[in-house]
Image 1 (cartoon, one colour):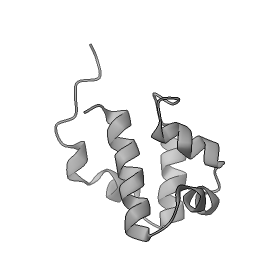
Image 2: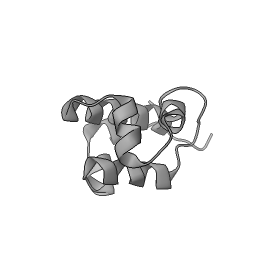
Image 3: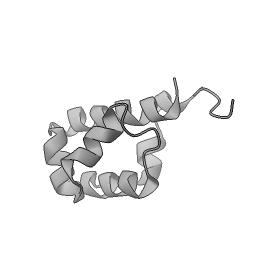
Image 4: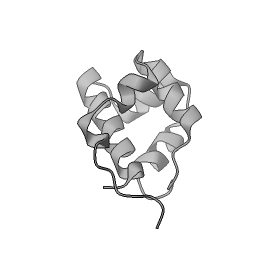
Length: 80
């Protein structure tokens, strides 16, 4: 799995855990819903760290908590 796909899955997992929709996440993170949806689909190949930080702030978690998940273990090599 590549990093972009892992980030998208993690965002959806966190929404599920917090029982919120992607639109609600966008609202609490202060991001346009289109930004988060582009992180979840093929539009954005490089989710920005600032957007991820805003998502974390909205969810009241740290970036460390965001990335401290098994899904980020064993990611594909990004440099080909």
